[in-house]
Length: 350
Image (cartoon, rainbow, N blue to C red; front, top):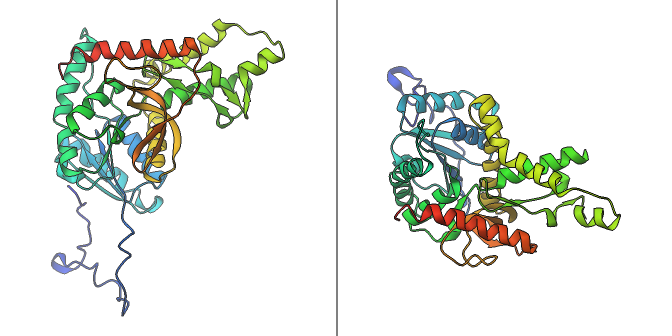
């Protein structure tokens, strides 16, 4: 499945013309040993996985993309569909297989695979099925790419990032969840929409659980470098806390609304994951709210728990957690969010 049927065998009897098509340059030196190719593997060829792969392709983030899925026919179809766009995209090798051997040597493995909830099924039972699924995904990725960075996108992302960390045996800096990176983008969009400014000029973060117990950091929001709440207070401009809570609730409900309208989310998470991939593989050292091992930060000391904190990402994975000032209320909500996740984790038996 790794090559399409056309390959380079166009000559009589399937003769490989690739070495005959060009006249070689004489007295050449080998490529620099310091220059290496970047490989990204995407596990799961569903709507989310393919949106991520497509965004990575268009942003020229990898020299090679490997796709893995349990459905061979759909997987081959997705691979061919991307390969057929080669004339419009940066040169990227695209391979696919149901065998995890195809991921060997990956710099970054992005896991989007997950079980779908059955009607009437409890969230705990769904989570346990996803844990069973991860037992067949994470160990082979760790085996074939022992130096890779794992990025978990599958939901519930915080608990499954913890599961991936336990199953891989990797140090915590090389296991990261997409977390609230997308939530924060939705947050910035809504604030920008309220103020009629560009979302890129809004600095705002959602941290904690990627879910109902997430925490909006209102105290540190700024627009064009101007702290919003302190500006309003300084100029005695009244605002209602209910309005702020309403914006946060809209962020939490955003995914549900998209799913109710189109059946799934894909494009926004595709851009979010590619955004994280760029920061990691290009060693951008940018700050992202992503799911990391939170024990020891912001008073979270009760156990090993992954949730979103403002973290610096680079070629080594998670390089550090930003020491953002939290109000007492924000810190309390963050610790409560950690307890919510820990309560679920305690039922997994890992």
